[in-house]
Length: 370
Image 1 (cartoon, rainbow, N blue to C red):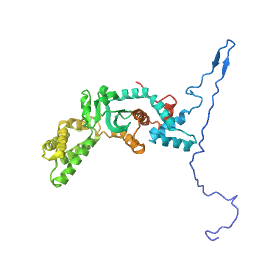
Image 2 (tube, rainbow, N blue to C red):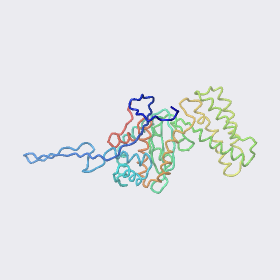
Image 3 (cartoon, rainbow, N blue to C red):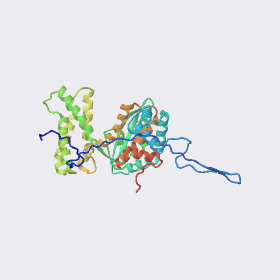
């Protein structure tokens, strides 16, 4: 028979020569399951009526269960939908009408159950050898507020306050008790805690130095020597040397000297105007705080940058971009507490929805005590 032609015979007894599989992953129709608890009351012959106790967490004649409340909080605080869009999503996904007030109430209850978690995590961070700190603006109640983050590799605490500086840091309660290496940018209030060891963010200072070289190239002569370029070159050279751990002091010394010489020249460079003043202030800071900038090269516990802290507060910017500012300060504080919980449980390998279901069940995840 010619290739490609079919004889038309039946295949019931024909041998199998190959097997191909096609798989389809899908969800079954999602419906709400209603569980009714009947609480029987009985009257004793003495006249006293006794009613059975409701199961734990069943407190009203009609209410939402922990899983559906966890999904509300997950969409609102975990995926940054607005309260209204969260209600619409719940209605369309699960055929269950949910009001803005219901979303708000579920979130407030969940955040209110995190007091013990927040206290335990704050204590863990305060007792750590190394912690990252940062802050960012966050609009709430029509005003600019500030989110402050403190974090380690395993724990995250975010707080919201009307102030950016020491008052807010004291209110968070971590920095006053912290005695390890604090990784941060050059924001002055961090320096008011004398008991901590400072490690300044080199990624941040690199951005500042690149701005100086860009200005030099535009305003002076792109082919001439620039003090900031020499600082950048030697700082990156030290970073390369530190990739395998702390740097041998004899190898570090010449790079450190070249870096300092450049910074001292920069501190006296007569660039005119506010830009020149800013550049000279940067050079003076590098000169005065060289040990804090080079902490990564002399202490193996200290990192090169503070990107870990910046990642913690990046979610706040994403939330504002997706759904705008928080309407109330209380709502912003709820956001901070729940972001702390989700970020910390994620670091411990716990799925966000699972962590929230534990929370809405009344048993939030807690760090182990030692």
